[in-house]
Length: 100
Image (cartoon, rainbow, N blue to C red; front, side, top):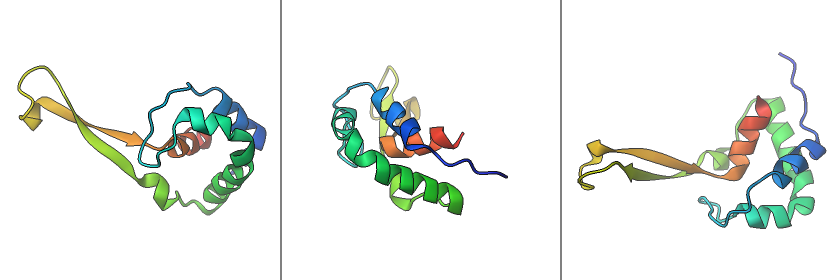
């Protein structure tokens, strides 16, 4: 399997295409903040992503998520009537997208 490294320009392009929402996952970073500092974080992120791809190891910290129930109509105390939703960090979503 040939691993094609991620270009910094590709990552910057991905960051600039984000919606400027204020919500955040467990890292506390919203898309708005990430877009504002994209020029400063693109180089280290590119390094981390390429290192992860070359070693075949997904960073442990990017595996963390906030899991919360999303209830359907009806009685909320019944967990069977809902489903769990995982809020992942934007960085883990990007790495997954850029891998494919």
